[in-house]
Length: 565
Image (cartoon, rainbow, N blue to C red):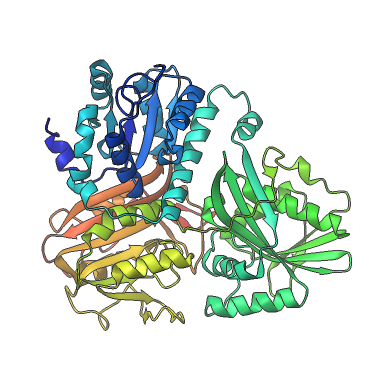
């Protein structure tokens, strides 16, 4: 029983959707004596270990499915999500693909019922549809066969992101209010001082995350910042870490506060939140919990410093909602707010997000970029390749906030001649120092097998010049790996933030006469695009000027960003 040519030549497989009865089980789930197909379970384990999302869709009650898996000794953590209900399977597939933004061509549906397979194929023509007997061949599909085993922490965090999306999607239906939905999501948040051994995690977060940073520090490296944090703690300041979860799935470390207390007054000297917190209202709830903790310590008045930038417009709106008062500018020129909290009730602010004492400080970087990197970019890396990563020295995006992930990444590139490049020298990174808009003095023409620009183009004054340089230094047959934030991603000046380049414009900037799109993935929906990730292969030598300027962008006077589709 052969696999289709479309599956054998697929460029990406991100998800496998399986039925239970007569597929993973020998017989129906309602049989008195359930029998597990051990060979097919091993295939599920193989896929899970390589970071492929495995979903169950079953026309049964969910509790029945969970009890069945437990009675058979099957670890339910192998499955990213279990959709068990009485809805038609094609409807559940549609919801799954819509919520996760996994494309049809990157998903496989396996069912023993020919009618269900036919319905799925008719409704989703690009979906790969298989009979259960064909599961044994999945590990031999080239795009799956080349994948290496991933770190369990990476797999877990990626699963949690998908679970959060699906929980919100499925719970939205039938909920009459946002409060009811938020309660159903079972969101939890913890605001607590970390252990001394975990302060380095917060130093990295303050140093590398600029998305919602209240009052960014300016330091040459995170080690200096870590020393400052130790000095602050030793002199009486309090560092609070913020972690969050939804439906029991942890988002890890999402924020931090630095607070000094003098008698009955406190000052929030700095705070930051990573992009993983956006859209969940965790920022407001975290600040409310912090104020409640300070009130219990006898604090009557709280001051807060905020840098005056368009990046922090969301924070200013948050402070207004919480009745903070603007009282002027500090000596450093930052905005200064205050609030009397002697009667403050933190439970009035988003009470559906439950406060917990469980602090989880794992911080995996941006999961969708890490996922795309290991699925699409890593298999293209060959021994002795020459690779340059532009604008890369701090490394938040590819998960270098965590020591284990950094070691995994360094092991991957150890067989190559790899260079980091940035505008300034970052101690410990051993990076080249240059402007990506002009690399003439650094790299000769067609000298690199791969050129990466991860979350870089929006931070350059003339991104078309960076594109010209990337095209110039990439060898024919080599690859360009680019990620850019989408139109829904907020401004994050580090040091500047000018552009939002959509997938249509990004592809046009690399004309098909010279480049071939190897992989392209969008995170979020078309109306709420968070990020675009793409790999181009250079097919022939490019002209000296590939793209002189962008055309047709929409400039937003309020935030200073120009948007392109």
